[in-house]
Amino acid sequence: MNPLEKLRKQKQEILDKKSEYERKITELSNMVTSLNHSIYNECGKLGHEYVTEIESGMYGETYHVCKKCGVYKWIFI
Image (cartoon, rainbow, N blue to C red):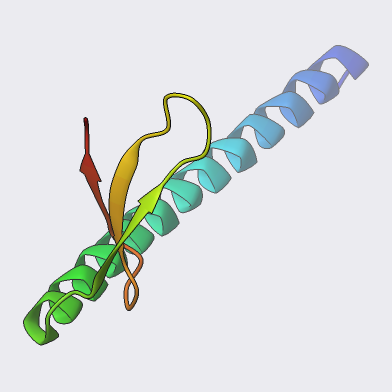
């Protein structure tokens, strides 16, 4: 195998690894999203405990956040 072929093979191996890692990252992101939904749903069964918060600044947004699960419920004024 000549040096050019070795380099092309090495490049392809790296691209294959990159694709595998990207697939794993996507899979993990989907798992986190699913867990977030489960947390939200379980907390909802018990009843969310929303606390009102206002961002600082002249045009700060008002929103509610659940003390138990951390879900945001935005209110635009």
